[in-house]
Length: 76
Image (cartoon, rainbow, N blue to C red; front, side, top):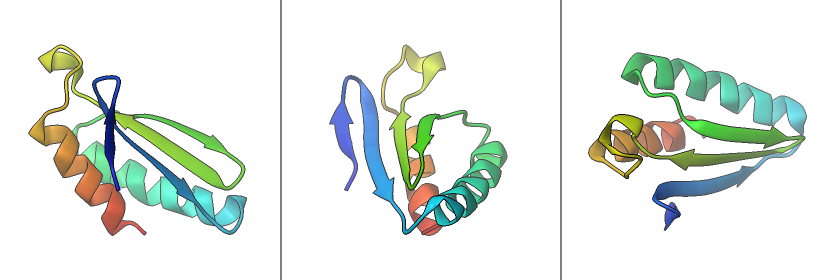
């Protein structure tokens, strides 16, 4: 479940290993590009973590972030 933390939608995903995490990130990158959204995210081995907010809206959570969150979940 996405949480609102520090003016961002936040979520952490854990996978079996790095290969699985990287495959997920590749799918997410294509969706983010299509939506013209550039999320803040990190990857450490099998963990991928996101913080979504819209810079053009003053670094607040907008529908654009919620849409990307839904697209990210569809990559699972």
